[in-house]
Each structure stands twice: as C-alpha cells, then as structure tokens.
Length: 357
Image 1 (cartoon, helix red, strand yellow):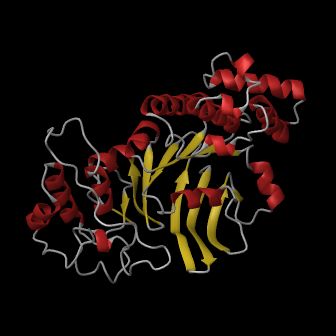
Image 2 (tube, one colour; image 1 turned 90 degrees about the vertical axis):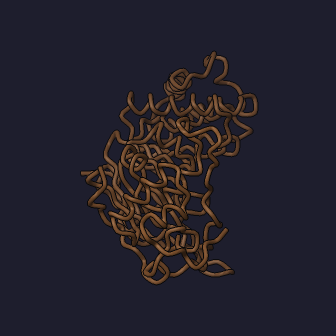
Image 3 (cartoon, helix red, strand yellow; image 1 turned 60 degrees about the horizontal axis):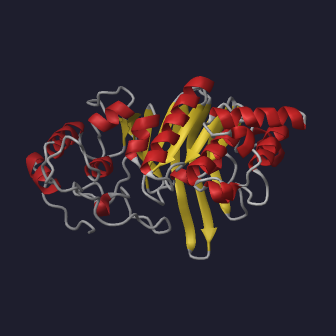
C-alpha cells in the first residue's frame, strides 16, 4: 500500500471575484522513502494541493473533494484534532520563507523543543538533546552555542537548515518541501538540496518537492508531476520526462532553461503568454491559448491523463490531444534545435490561429 495516495483531489475557493478553481482532479501516489517532484509555474496549484494534504486549506470559503489517504487514513475526513497529531509528527512541511516560518521572539532551540514535545512526550531535557542532535545533523556550525540564537541571528541558509531540523525532529514518514531553496543563493541552494537528499536516504523519509525549478527536481526526485492550471498534465519518472517529455508545456519548460551541451549562441525559447486565470479558465485544454501545437480538439475537449504507449517509462502519463507518434516527432525536432514553427511543419500541423505572446 502506498504511503500517500491522492485521488481526484479538487480544491476551489469562493471569492468576491468568483470561484477560484485552484486544484482540479489531481491524482498521484507516493511510497515510503520515495521522492516526488511537483513542478509548474506560479498559480498552477502545486502548493495548494500539498497544503490540502496537510489540512491547511480548510476554510469557510473552501470546497474540497476527492481523497487523500495517508498510511491508510483518510485525511480529508479527519478532525482538526486528528490532523494536529499528524502534522509535525507523521507529516512535516518546509515552507519557502524560513524567516516568516520561525517565530522571531523565541530562540531556535526553544522552537525545536516545542515541536518535539508536542508529539513525543519527551521531557524538556530530552527534547533539547534531540534538538541539538538535529541541528548537528543538518550542519549548523557550533550547534551547542547556536541553539540559543534567535532566527535573525542566522543567515538565510542556516534558517532553512533550522527549518529542516524542525521538520525532521519527530522522524516524519512524509516531508513536504514547498520551494525550500527559492530565496537562497546558488551555492546554499545546492547545499540544502544535498542535505535533503542525504537525510532522505538516512531516515527513509518520503518527500514531496514543490518547485518551479526543473533542476531541483532532477537533484532530488525519482518521479515528477508537471502541473498546469490546477491539473497534472504529465507524470512519469524523472529520467523519462527529461529525456522524452510528452506534453507541449513540459517542452516549453525544458527549452526555456540553458543546457551545457547547447551551442553558446542558441537562444532560449520561453513559454509564450501568461498562466490563465483560475477563475475564468480557457475551455478545452487550458494550455491551448499558449500552445504552439494547438489543433482542432484543443479548444473544445479536455484531454484525459493517459499512459503514453511510446514513452520509455511504462507509467508515463500525459494529457494532450497530439498522437504519441506526433509528440515523438515534435520533441525530436525541438531537441535538435528546431523552433516550434519548424517542428509544426515537420509533422504537417497548420499554424495555430493565435498563440499568446
């Protein structure tokens, strides 16, 4: 049985401007000790889907349907008291901004001690010893002295390490990391990713890594789910999705980042247009207004998330109206340096009526 099983999760919020359809029919599963990357632009629903797993989107204006099974227990039907026992104990979360996640008035050590005692029943002395152990484990220098520091006395990288220590202090079965390296410089980012990877191996913690950075996914995850407009549009192993992506949005993400093996004068190709409004989403495939490969069914039919028979991974799911053969030909052309227009011509697709710029 999977440790985490999300099935047809839908989350919407009733606002003054209309109903925000933040998550629309998201499904995935995660085994103990595995790592899943959820990638997409801002507003794609990746954070809301994971906050819902933690029970943090419950509000009077929220409508949540579907199923979230954690270790066999349905979390969507759990009481607030039941969720409080699970959060921080069996499921932990690292947030994007550690400075706003740590209380500025309390010492780092006191916050770690409180997190430990809420779920373990340890004495203050035992909890402090555990806190010191975790600070050493995540690489805080001179942890015995820094345990009594305040958050503002830590650098950004050290605060993020302290947040990781807090998240892992109760040996959770599942760790959700929401953009944990966004505010950090490249060197510290690499250190944090290496730390998360090593702790996963050491503690056998399952990880859901939420990010907009495909490089982070490649570093940490074994499988990746690409989200767009509240839906998963592609889902497969990291190796398969990076080597043989099957969705036009994933092609756009991959072609918009630099590669070491590309010619120095080759220009990056950004995804045209902007993410859609989650109140007034486009009909049919939500990506069609921005898709260089739009064709007849796209504006009217919502594509199902189905296994691609030509993909290298036997569990490579994609939601796209293009045929498997056409997708293979287009990606081969794009990967060889062709422009989207040249790739369209390769497979005989007529130019789309309009693609957002």
